[in-house]
Length: 502
Picture 1: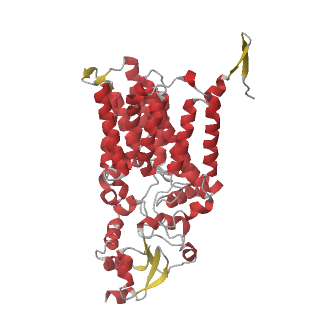
Picture 2 (picture 1 turned 90 degrees about the vertical axis):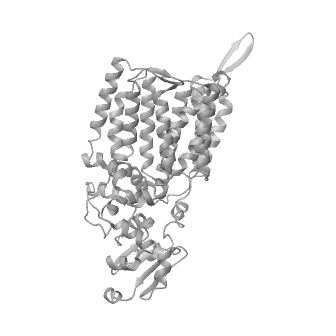
Picture 3 (picture 1 turned 180 degrees about the vertical axis):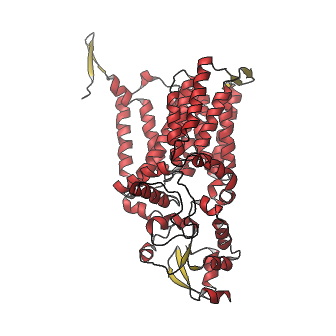
């Protein structure tokens, strides 16, 4: 039990707060708790995501069959075609949480991952700036930028490993050596998410930046010492070798290259791969962040290390090119912004007031518990995105033929309506590789739609109510409505396929 210590000096009594209490209820901890609360309020109270359904099925298969998926088993269009579960490790926490706590478990893993990343950004900002206030302030921008990926997504584990990697590299720069952990980070990372390639690029930039020495205006580079260089070289080689410790071997290591060079339709048609729109609030925050970095540099004219400049350029280019990488920009850019703000935001530990911080922290933690959504709310959270209202009907739906489903609904059907093989889902790689994605896009955009339905012998169409294909089939002879609600329509072909072709 922790108690206050009473000091008696010259006839007066003074209360001295124990050191442990000062640390646990100190101002830095208070800011971390408040950041967690603000982040929680910003996270959508939903587990609706196009991918989470098939991620859960994958993890279920691994744990029950004790085998890794190596071919498609969910669709009728690419059934049996080669496919690897390149994010298998990050699927397991979501599945185990669902087994233990249902939808709330999935939401808890989501919140825990997001909070861990944001607190990691806070830590990186403090490591760079030595000002907890400046690091805390920049984390508000991080919340808005990172919100593009708030949801039950395996990508979150990739960003977690990136924060860990940067913490190791920045600590090494300050002569705190934890490099031995990097190969283990990459071993886990390659099995969790394809974003390990970004981490490897950043590691290369960090190492190469220390091969030169000099000053170029506000940019400075310092050469590694001989022992540092050898240590970095050994760790880099071990990190590369660790990538091949996975159930798919070299194929998994090559997957990011397949994504970059062969999945053109995926990148062209998925919303998060589109360029940043500067008319949106996030676009304005990015502009504001970049303007702040430039203005602060003009005012302070501080020296930037070469790797810092390159990291900021990588983060900025990635975020401007693909909105998906706004999270990456938050991790790479904002800690250096905190470094620029530190001069105006000093923190004096001797002025701390633990007795005031403690009730505020307690109130924030109680709010987190009280605001945690219920199972029912989480189950209903996808009602505007998925055919939730139609689920009771679909559970008893045993189609006598192939079903064309909405692309965004594929994962939901894989998890909730298992007796219906899907036409397509958000595992885009296998469908693009086999031409199914291109056919789906043509059909959905009313380009040879009826011919494509005939090509795949489609007997049913399960789609959103408010899309052109649904309207077309409702007004096409030979199709009837079997089910309809505010979001979903199920249409059935009434004429034999052969008759439809005549």
